[in-house]
Length: 208
Figure 1 (cartoon, helix red, strand yellow):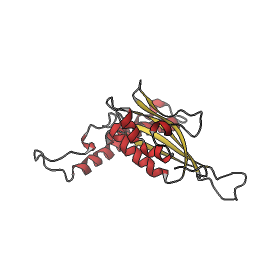
Figure 2 (cartoon, one colour; figure 1 turned 90 degrees about the vertical axis):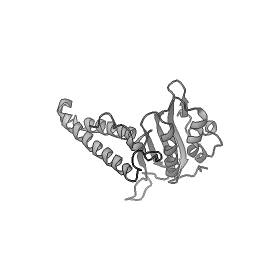
Figure 3 (tube, one colour; figure 1 turned 135 degrees about the vertical axis):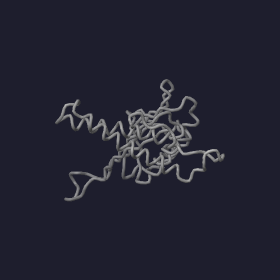
Figure 4 (tube, one colour; figure 1 turned 45 degrees about the horizontal axis):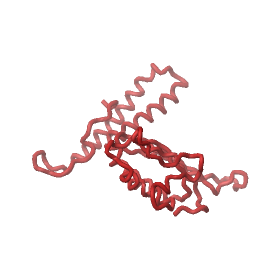
């Protein structure tokens, strides 16, 4: 259970589109690492954020999506809960999605801090999706957006097609390497072997 003397306020933010067949019970089970960390016994109890003005954890029935805008008090061990949550959400997701997680150092006071000491604030991006290709698609789209935003300060958008193509090439190479690694150890075709890895799916639509 998270302590009120915890060194971090941890904010989790994002939206995950869910498969049409996913219901509340499945979502509750997938999110158990979060609400259990918060000291709750159910998702309904743990869905409330530490801050009342935040929506918390919501299941949007109309969009069939998980909405996250939720803060919990905790420590570095919360990262393990995030890993477990992402593994579970992969199985429920309809498409790739990014989840932002921010650790705010509650013990750091800039005015009272010793010279040379720094806040332990941290920021991380997590990615979930039904396949590695879906996850790479989100990573690619975010990177392109960041690069374009940065370079448009110096160049027109029309000049940046080559940059986007190079990003696509890098992700395509990474995807091919992933597929090849998953092919190793697979039984020969027609041998009646077991399930293949996710990597056998289609490439992200922008990767050539």
